[in-house]
Amino acid sequence: MMLNDLIDAITKILADEKAYDLPNICLKYGLDNGDESEAFESKRVYVQRRLKIKDQTFLLDLAHKVLNDYGSTAKELSKVLHRLAPNGLFSISEITRRNIMNELYTRGNIEGKLEITDFLNRIWSLENMSSTDFRFNNAQEEISQHMINNLDWDEPYLYEVYLDVLTATDETIIQFLELIIHPIVRDPIEAKEYLEVINSHLVKDGYQFFPSNKLSGYTVYTINKSAKGVNGVAKNLIFASIGDKPDIIISDSINNDIKIVNNESNCLVYNYPLPSTGLLWMDMVQWWSDLNNMGEIDKGTEINLYKRLVKSLDSEPERILFKNYFQLFRYQFKDKLPALIPQVYLHYDPYTMKQRLNSKVLSRQRMDFLLLLPNQHRIVIELDGKQHYSNGDISSPRLYAEMVNADRDLKLNGYEVFRFGGYEFIDKEKIKQSIKYFFEKLFFNYGVKING
Image 1 (cartoon, rainbow, N blue to C red):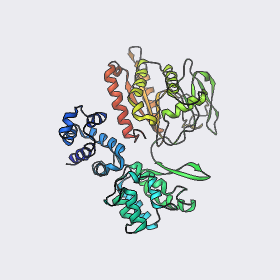
Image 2: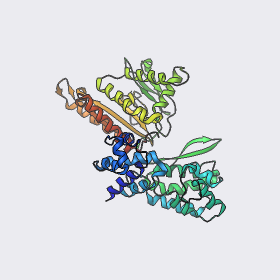
Image 3: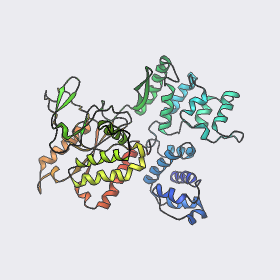
Image 4: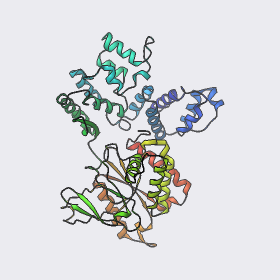
């Protein structure tokens, strides 16, 4: 029954589109193709016919994409998703949200130093939201009337009934809570009190506030995962070596500084600060442009960096994965595509000198590919050829043991390791579908949204 509710909620949103646009919109979401004449007969039937042949996993994934694209116009879909998969799509539970809101109501003045509509417009686009009263052109006019002029709405009605914060997306509730303690809204002493109260509830779902920036001397906080992921800040990203491999040592064991003592010119070193949102492709393009004094970024800048990275790839399977990643996702994600970093030697060294038995040589094996995702999630992708588990055509238990030992080591330090077998790359069309499925599921599981 709940799955039918999900289908109905998706249908209601898509069926509001123009009939002549509907076939292309459905195709964009991975639904079966059709023609305009079928859509003109009944938009609702057109959509439902294509949804009902899909399994639950596909529908949940699709619902998440639709919710991300349609935002505040998809309130009913958001509620259905929350009932159907409260622990999957929504990491901050309704219980936590309700407890936080009750704390905020007790303190009052949620909007702080801002006017209520100014505060809300920093999260919701009120002028583009429909009102529930025909007398008003939009949500901004309606909220102003009831929260400023008449004062006949209370905060629970505004936030829970009108704005649906209890079932809004995680992104929306996080933006809302971050704004509450932002320096533009609240003075530091008061902000600290709110931060501590909100944190006491967020931590139960594995989230908390972290200092992320400075604004005119004031600390700005963002909400991130407080569990999982790698502990520490990425300092050194050494990758894409061509020719002889770099020889890396620890030059300062106290500050964990590294130095490349041989073959530095053969590799790339990304030394810009890593944002809490992870490393994006366009971050790397900007770095590449600065490194080479290329001036304004354009298509040529991207192509130049892409070609340089391809040169570092050792095998045809690596080239196939790298090429398909960009073909499948570059324009879909636009400027928010996570950077797929090839041939990574070091980006964060989790070992102390004591753990290394006082050795200063960094002996970590190279990673085939690395993704630095939000909330300190580090995704390692390995492509296994015969050299990983055999000497020539003879299987080697030693090599296999070394490989799984390295995997354990990475996982214990907070990394996630995913492996592709070399045999998968024989059929190029089949591996393209496998790559597409893998990254779509990966992004979904780690909360990476199309276009941010």
